[in-house]
Structure formats: structure tokens, C-alpha cells
Image (cartoon, chains in turn yellow, red):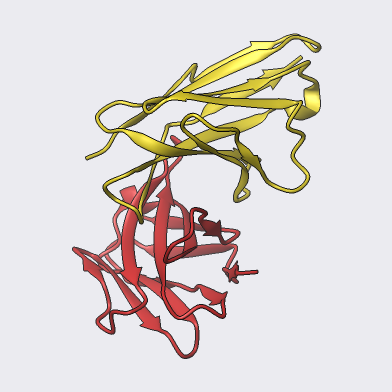
Length: 116
Length: 114
């Protein structure tokens, strides 16, 4: 099956610093990748959709200057949380859509971000 | 806009018994896809089952089956012969046929008692 990896799995940073999270499709090309945020015992909230080679589309209420998304290749998308603050602490999950499988998204294992 | 509702925040089932998780959705589209995802404590999202709206036959994957009622916009998940490993958060999700986004319900925590 299609595999999506995320790195790092967990990160702790100081308030005011920036953190980059990588999402990779390991055995398929992902024309579209998605970034979600999840609070404990809550549902996934879509933050943005990124298409390879173009700017990401952000959901309403998501600050694009705060959460920078880059999808430079068909196998890699990155989410950078800039000037992180404690309220940015959360679980971030990426997913990727295989261009051959239009209807299914494959999820990464998630990244737990803690901002002190 | 499409919405997905899971009205059961938590459910419990005895090992080896059967449990049904409820999901309703709202859409004006006629063609779409519905999914059930499992999120165990590891937080890895796992696709359990998928249903295409144009198919009348309910999808089945081993111990997991759905009851898809298109007119009622209902999509429940039945887990038979429940196992301890089934304990997880379960999410119902909707996707338009040619859309990008998954719309998730709030989730149901399933506890399996031994």
C-alpha cells in the first residue's frame, strides 16, 4: 500500500522559533498533499491543500504567513510553523493523494509539536 | 457546504460482540464517496472501508461492513466479533466525487471490554 512518512514525529521548541515538518510520499507521486491539525480527542481540521509546483490553498481562518507550506516536488511537502507560540502546540498530520487513486488519501503518522 | 455528523462521542462493546457506529451527512451532490477511518492510540489514520455513492451494495471488509442509506444520508459502520485491537477513535468522512477535500465527522471513541 501507499506509504506516507512525516519527520519529525515529535518536536519541542521554544516560543518564537520556527519549526519545519516534512511530509513524504515514499512509493508514489503525490500531486496533492493536505495538512491537518488535530487537538486531543477531536477531529482533524484541514489547514491547507498543496499542489506540486503551486501555492497552497488555505482554509478560512488559517494564517498563511504563520503556516508556510511548500510542495516543491511530487514526493515532498513541508509545513513551517513560523514564530511558534504555545497555542500552536498540536498534532499535525499530512496526507497525500496518489494521482492514480483520485479518491483516496494516504495519511502520515503525524507530528506532535510542543511549544514551550 | 457538506457536513458529517457522528452523534455518538463514545461507544463500548464487549469483546466478540457486535457494535454499530452511526454517521449521517448532508450534501446536495448525487455522486460522492464515504469513508470510515480508524485512529488508534498511535494516531496513525487507517482507512477501514470506503463506499461509492453510486453503488447500492454495501461495502464489506472482513469484520467491517457498512449500512449505506443514500436517501436517508446515513452511513453506519458495523464491527462484528469485536477485538481488543478495534479500540480506537473512528471517523466518518465524506468527499465529493471530483473534490479534493475530506470532510470529517467529530469522531466516535470505541472502547472494547475484555
